[in-house]
Length: 467
Image 1 (cartoon, rainbow, N blue to C red):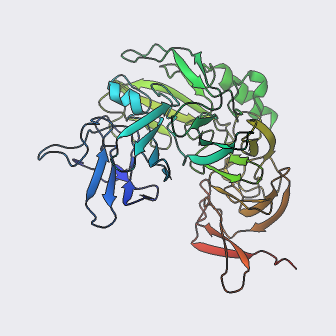
Image 2 (image 1 turned 135 degrees about the vertical axis):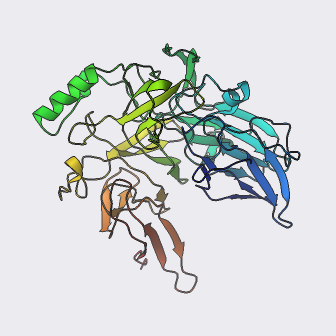
Image 3 (image 1 turned 135 degrees about the horizontal axis):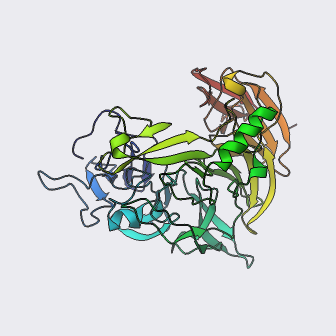
C-alpha cells in the first residue's frame, strides 16, 4: 500500500463474503493530493486467510501482492461503499469512487478515467474484470457511486425474469443494467454537456443520462426556484443564484463561482434502496443540497487548507485547490424551494415513479442551527437506509428529526412514528424470535449528521402479533 498518513485510508463499509473469499475495499480521503493511498480491492481466502487475488484499477495485470519495493497503484479509484455478490453468476459488483482529487482531473491516467465512478463486475474466483459500466465520465463533481448495488430478478412479463442490477447515484439518476452483461435494461442516453475552460483540464463531451428510470431531485434550477424563510432570505438567495453559473447537473467547475446541483452529497447517497418483491416496488430516499464551488489557483491556496467537508480543499499535486460551499441562505437554509429530501417509490417493472413524499421536519433543526420544535413536514435531507417488509410497511429513520417512521408502501402515507433519544443514520433491521414467533424492528440511534446530539442506543420495537 505504501505510505498511509493518519486519516487517509479507512474502512467505511463491511467486507463482502463471496463464496470462499472475503473481499475488502477502503475509503481514500478526498482532495488532499494526488498520489494518495491505493484504491486496490483485495480478496482473502476464508480458510487460510491468505490473499486470493487483488484488483488494482491502475495495474489490472497485478493480481497478487506487489513485488518487493513496489506498491499497488496510488491515487486510483477506490471502493468505499458496500459491494454486492451474485453466487449464480460468480460475480462481485464494485461501486467505484473517483481518482483523487475530485475536482481536477488533468493529472489522471487513462485507467483512472476508465474505472472511475463505475460499476465494475469482477470474477469472484480470480478478480478479473468481466464488465464495467461508467455512470459519470471523467468525474469532476465527486459523483462517485455511493451505494450498494441492488441485485433483483425482474419479471419479464413472459413467465421468466431478467437478472438486473440497480444503482442509485449522487447525480439523482438511477441506472438499471443486466447484471450478467452490464448492458442497460432501462434506457440511457449519452447527451452533450457543457465544457469548462480550466487550464490543464480536459472534459468529456457527453455524459450518461438514465432516462428509462425516474430522475430524482436533479432538475436545472432557475431563479424562480429560489426560496427563503423570510423575504430578505429569499432576496439574498436570488442574488447569490444570479451571481453563479449554473448549467445543469454537469456544470463544470471553473475559476468563476458555479452551482453544482445536486451537490457532492447527492442526490442519493450510501443508504442505497429497499425493495418489496411482492410488487417490484423500490424505495429511494434522497437529499437536495446544492454546492457552490470555484477553483483556486495554487498560489492562493493556504498552506493549512483542509476543508474536507466544506471550505478550500488543497488538491496538492495539481495547479488548483477548490472552494466548496453549501448553497445556503444566511440563515443556513437551502436556497432552493423545498422539499430538501424525499422518499420515492419506483415500479421496477415499468420504470415509473409511483409516489414521492417529503420526509422529515424542522422539529430538531432550523435557521442558524436553532431547533424550531415544530413538526412541519418540509422534507429535510435524508441519509441512511430503509427497510421494506412483506406486510406493506417501509421503516426509515435517516431524517434530521429524531424519529423512526413507518410508511404505507402503497401510497407513502406515514402511519406510525416513534421518538428517538437522538437522530439516526442507521438502517432498521427486523427479525422473528424463534422462541415466541414475535417480530421485532431494531434501530441504532447514534446521532443525525447535522446535530451535535450523540448517543449509543439500540432500540427494539415489537410488532403486534396477528390474531
